[in-house]
Length: 635
Ligand code: WT7
Image (cartoon, rainbow, N blue to C red; front, side, top):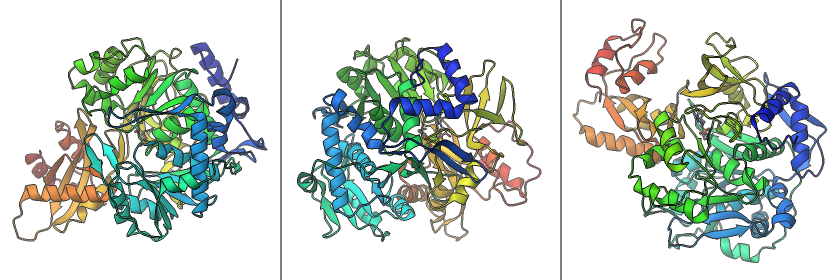
């Protein structure tokens, strides 16, 4: 029996039991079986959730790019590593082989070095989904620089906040990006963001849209001429297993975005292992994950996990609706995709369109379908199963988080029987626990509670960059000696898990994790606004949409409400990005508050969802009368 590859349900249970009883033996065997180490570890695991401190494969030496690239050169050097599908279907797809990718990464790594980037330096990458994005990520890893990819849909303020938080020395961007029928001036956004930053010495600019942009002399450099000059050989920096690999920002329920820090050895082992099993990858498969590399899904399951397995991984630059709603299915047919991994919000959007967009294409190459990012509703699950998978492709509903690095709960296709809306069973090595409000573990089946994990797994984030205290408070303080996920879940009669959604003030909109606090802060910057509160309400495509309750300052002047709404959404777009815009804005005379001054979001959520039959006890409120007033004018 190979620990690395699970092939049927009985084997899953065997492997799972072993992974819980002897976690160190289990992970040591996985790590030995499949990876290139320059030196093996002295100790498999050391952990203490109370500090918290987690160390996997201590003392081991490696470079993750040797595992993603060099390892494959002799066996599959001419195999396509990255298959790039451009925004415009008329532009030719690019097949980048492992040999070519290796060379590109080495050249890029040498460019980074020539601009003074060294091991441990932070490099912010703000690029569209073009090959340079994957190459620059790997080039950083090649030389031990810590990459921090910022999704290229974020605003200049969001970008500068992240650059400043990690004190980046360099930014990598492009002259612009294509998104459906639009072009976006990425370099202009970077220029604006950099006005607020002092640590960035150099900006590398890839050419994508051939626009005429301004280059700041001494700071900005076109990438291509530097790559042409650079050597195509670059020895990999030998890293400790616990050396940082990357920082990726995610929203919290309060305050600034959290820079989740992932380290090298454990992250590599876990993402590779879960990729192999969750997608049952075989040598000639063409795997496509539609996420952006700006999110953790792209890091783990477009770049590192697939490449560590020698897979062919598709990078798609465009959007599902361009040039029409058949684009995804056209690509599936064109490249004979075998595994297709997307978000419920995309499925719901496409399910609304005419089925002709699907039926025009031959989808028979598909073997496995996946979803990630938010709970999938039953209707969307069935649409996906019936129309895309033709009832023959298992759907892997994969539950995980930026913080977890890799998938924690998911069916293993062809082993675990699937069940609509259930992420089903924990991956080997994952020990979930459901907790009640008094901090006790709820044992047994057919129960519901707050989802925690009791034991570390190799790819858990090690800290929040620059703020270990916050890491401890956010994840390890709610329940003693457990990692708290922020999600609620239920466990059915056979032990399958269903994730019911966030139990904190994070709202998932179209699969994007949004914290209420940064949005409220943006709104409150408007001179006419006194206070605001954001809640989520059900939306048939986005999953959740945002509802804002806004108290205006009593300035005496009567303002145009629609104008105000536009201005508020513009502020949010400027500070965070268009994904955080509010669908509804209600101007209210007050907000329901507890006597300690905490906003009762529970009540606001009910009003926003038009579910006011049972508001619960409002008598403990400081201002119960305001609830009626809000309900009267609810949108
Ligand atoms: C939150 C994490 C993991 C990559 C994308 C999101 C929600 C994620 C599922 C799922 C139900 C899910 C959770 C989680 N979530 N996958 N299969 N079923 N909910 O990463 O931005 O860090 O968000 O997304 O609420 O906590 P993220």
